[in-house]
Image (cartoon, rainbow, N blue to C red; front, side, top):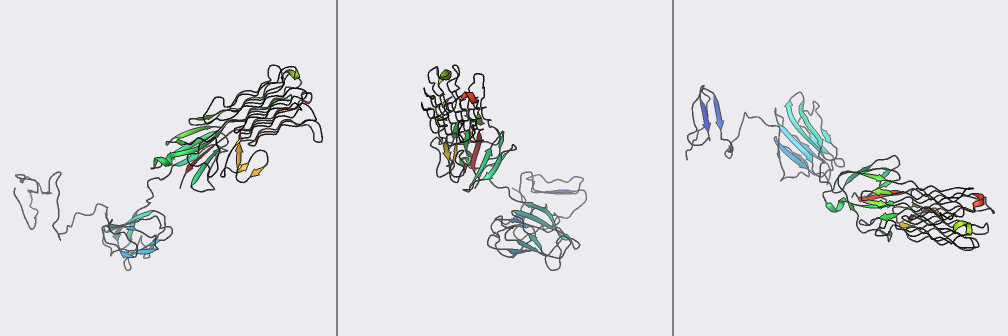
Length: 489
């Protein structure tokens, strides 16, 4: 191996001197070029040696081994991590020389609370002004280059360095009646869909466990029918409890596993309630069954429409919860059963059967099934069956339970509609907690009334109509709802 040591290289026209090019790589050609090193090789300066004339590339050497926590003086060509979490302090700039460069970054993202002051040397300037500068933006990073005595140090790069590994998903919602809010329990976001829209996952967490969301998907309630009709079945109730949605109390119908999402838009379907029916004075028809609500792989079905006092329409329709049955054929036929619930079947079940209609003398109609209980059977004294109780979540879904007004810690969903009745001396079927409508009422102290509608966005079934001679209609079913809950802190 050959070795060449020189104290200086003097330019001489017409020569090329190659240093470090390997054995037998030195030659003279018609050029004035000095080449140091070879392709893939390294050129090193000896200890204590300096270079000049090459200029800077616009970068600094970051001082990762010396995090700054108090006032210090910067050096040309260095970048610093400033930790102001313990309090504000100052970075003094070095004496300026053309091309000098210094950088600094907010190490703990606390500049907005505890500022970093940038102080020029003596009477030198920062951006043409002989005053201190202040960095007060969270995650800020800046680079200063000294230009000349007129402008002094110029800030050539100013950004927020907040690109960090995401600990939680970031999501958004669309649709005019849909919202995204922070849970009152803290640590969670709640996306609520009262109508169609999209749940869009914009970015994922770096932790797979935090890409799991809990869901509450409620179908819409079935409509009540007229002519001492049954109550509408409640819309289906499906929810998960992977993240304790919401802690500490939740429905026994909750599935233990949520859904792992990916970065995409998830279309949300929220069904309108099934229509109540009034066919008086012609023979009536069943109430219209409710519709399905959907979030990705979770489809929750609508409640069954209520049965009607007509020989061909007496049975409640099947659905997530079945509609209530009645006495067939104006009292001439047999009492009919309520519609079958949990149709199509899910696990845990999404609802229950409707109640059966009663026989003479007063033919009380069955209540619609609810998420947590079957609809009540009608009574022979004419009293309509109660709607099946809905299922509940607590406490972050606080609101109206559909029958008794505001409830601060519990909210019910998917209550069945109350069954109708025949005699003015009998009693209306009560709606199930969870938005089920009460049945229509006959003459008495209060004016006759149609069956009440299920409460909007609860999936409650509509109440059944009263005696056919007054033509009181059945109530509409309540619309569905979709709620998605995920960690954000």
